[in-house]
Image (cartoon, rainbow over the protein chains, first blue to last red):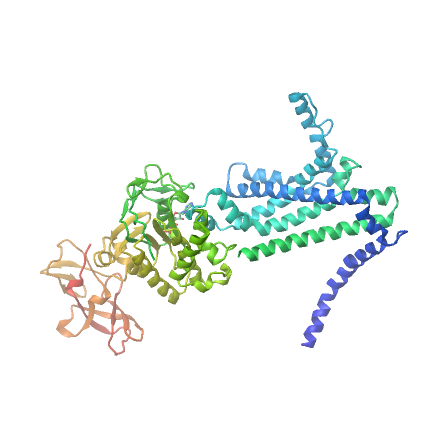
Amino acid sequence: MNRDGHRLTLLLLPAGIFFGAFFLLPLAQLFHIGLTGKEGWGAYTAILTDRNYFSSLLSTLGLAAITTVVTLMVSGLAGVFLQRNRFPGNGALVAMLTFPLAFPGVVIGFMVIMLAGRQGLIGDISRFLTGDKIVFAYSMAGLFMGYVYFSIPRTILTVMAAAEKLDPKLEEAARSLGASTWHVVVDVIIPGLKPAFISAGAICFATAMGAFGTAFTLATRINVLPMVIYTEFTLEANIAMAAALSFVLGAVTWVVLAVARTAAGSTVAAAG
Amino acid sequence: MTETMKPLAITLTGCAKTFADGTKALEPLDLAINAGETVVLLGPSGCGKTTTLRIIAGLEQPDAGGKVMFDGEGVTPLSIEKRNVGMVFQSYALFPNMSVAENIGYGLRLRKTPTEALRARVGEMLAMMRIEKLADRRIDQLSGGQRQRVALARALAVRPRALLLDEPLTALDAKLRDALRIEIDELLRRLGITAVYVTHDQAEAMALGDRIVVMEHGKVAQIGTPRDIYQRPATLFVADFIGTMNRVQGRVANGGFVTAAGTIPWAGAPAHITEAMFRPQDISLAEGGDAHLRGTIAAAFFLGDRTRLAVNVGGEKPLILETGTRRDFKHGETVGLRIDPHGLLSL
Ligand SMILES: Nc1ncnc2c1ncn2[C@@H]1O[C@H](COP(=O)(O)OP(=O)(O)O)[C@@H](O)[C@H]1O
Ligand SMILES: [Mg+2]
C-alpha cells in the first residue's frame, strides 16, 4: 500500500513540477504583479470601476460569446451536411474549409481587410450596387468576421467526427414516431452532438477571448481586452494594470467555461 | 386496455430495391399481409429482410414500379413519419437524452397529446411491459431486455397501424430471448395488431409467425404457415434452412425408394425423383428385418436426455437422427434405420 503510494507520488512528480513551474508560479506571479501598483488592489478594482476597462471586458465577453454561437451554428449545419452528403468535390471542400487552421491572426486580419476594408471586395460590390461603400473591417464587426472565419475549421472537424458517430437508427426511430425534420434535429441530432459542441465551443470561446493578432492588424483602437493589455503594457508602461487585466481575462474565461460545462452537464442529467 | 385501432392490411407489389452503389438487394417482390396477422421475414443474413421491412416502413423507396399499399391505399411516396407504423430495432434505438418515461411519451408529445392523457398512456404502457419501476431511469441504466421493453412500449404508445420489428431479440442472451419472445407473442395476439417481424432464427420464426416468408438472395423462396413450411418445403433451400432435413439419393422401383443402403417402402412416390427427404424425428433405430436402411455411425453426441447420431448411408451427407436409448454408440458401428413413411418428402 505505502510503497504503491510512494511510487505514485514519484511518478506524478515530473507532472507536478511542470505544472508548478509553468502554470501555477507564473499565474501567481501575474496575480502578484497586479498588486504592485501604487494603490495595491487598485488595479483590480479599476477593472470594475473604470468605464474603459469595464466596457472592454464586457465587449470582449460579448464578442467571444457571439463568435462562439455563430461558429457553432455554421459549423453544426455545415459539418452535419458535409458528413451526410457525399458529392463530387466533398473532400476538396472539407480541405478548403480547414485551410485557415494554420493562419496566424495577422493573416486573418489581412484577409478581413481585403474583404471588408477600404479597398475591399464588399465595399466595391456595395458601391457598384447602391452607390454606398460598406466598410466594416476596422471595427468589432470586422473582428467578429475574422474570429468566425478562423474558428470554423476547428469546430467543423469536431462536429464532423461527432456526426459520424450519431446512430442513424435514433433518427429513424424518431421519424417512425412522427418526428418532422425539425424535431429530429432538436431531439436527436443536437443532443447527440452536444458533447462536441461543448468542447469545440469552449475552445472557440477561449480563443476569441484571448486572440490578439487579428485585432492588432485591423485597428489599434478596437476595444477588446488583449488590445487594452497590450496598450497598458507597451505604451503606458503600466505593468500592474496589464498584469491585473491579464489575470482577470484568464479568470473570467475559466469561470464562463466552467459555468457552461456545469449547465450543460446538469441539463443532460435532468433530461436523462 | 383498449386498443381500438382497426388492424392494417399491407400489400407490396413489384417492390425491387437497387441501392445507389448498384447492390441489388431485392428482386421484384409481391407480398400481401393480412390485417392483424404476424408475418415473419426469415432468411440468412443479407437476403433482403431488413430492406423489405424498411420499404414497408417508408425508410426506403422501392425501385420505380414498386408499390406499397396500406388497406388498399397507395402510400409509396409517403415517408415514414406520415405512415404511423411502430418500429423496434435490434439496437433498441432509445433516445439517450430522455428518461424511460420520456422515451415512451415521445410520440405522444409530437402529437401534442394533453399532459394528463400523455401521462396516463405512458403509465398504461409501463404497466403493459411491466417496467413501472423504471419510469424515471436513464437509458444507460437499463439492461438489454429492459431496453427492448421500453422500445416496444414507445412504439406501441402512439397506437400505430402496424408494428415492424427488425431482429428485436438478436442482441439478447438466450434465456432472456426466450422469455421476451413469449411475451411479444402474447402481446401481438392480445393487441391484434398487424406485425412484420424480421429474424434469421428459424425457431423464433416458427414460434411467432402466423405465416413465414422465407427469403433467399432478395427473393421469396416460400410463404406459408410454420407447419406448411416445415412439412412441405417448396425448395431445397427452405428444406435445409428450416430445421434439419435428411436427404438420401436413389430411385423409385416396386413401391419403394431404392438406395445404396437399402429400400425405403414408399407407396405413392413420384416416379421421377432421385432424392428422398425426411426429418430426424421420422427415423428410428431398428433391428433385422424391421430396418429399411443400414449405415455406420459417423458421430454420436450424447445430449443427456437423448443422443444425436450421424449415420453414414453412402449419401452426400450422413443422416441425422436422435434416439432416447441409454446404450452407448461406437464410431463405425453398423446400425439399422427405419423411416416413417408419413415423413417422406420429395422435391
Ligand atoms: N444502404 C445500402 N447500400 C448498399 N447496399 C445495401 C444497403 N443496405 C443493405 N444493402 C445490401 O443489401 C443486401 C440486403 O441487405 P438487408 O436487407 O440488410 O439484409 P438482411 O436484413 O436480410 O440481412 C445486402 O447484400 C446488403 O449488403
Ligand atoms: Mg437485417
